[in-house]
Length: 154
Image (cartoon, rainbow, N blue to C red):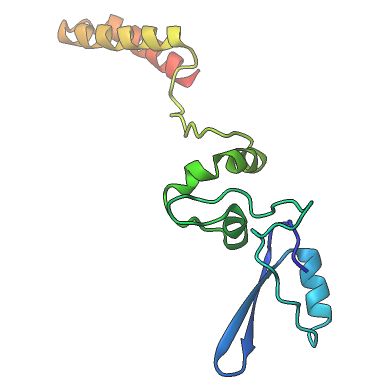
């Protein structure tokens, strides 16, 4: 019942003598498992073990905490901060499929100028506005203020 797909169902079986067994299954395997609840799944071999001609399904493993990529995908949690580096090759395609990008650029202020030249002009205009207010040249300061607003609003 184990496969390489991401586990989306996490089932905890309550066993005799206050023991528990966790089963992590993809949607297809979970349907099979739940349709035959009287049958216990065969104990799964560790996914890191490879038989001749068999592909390694666990993926890379973190050298610091020992977490495998498959365990991360099944549980959805990292074991330590080093996992980001250990699983970088697998995370980049995953992040790109989820977010459309692999690099976080954050939000930008709505009033941020679109181009570098606008940014330079805006900085100069703000200095000029301060100078005009100091000189009490309010008519020219109003024109500069309007140009600043124009640049900020795009």
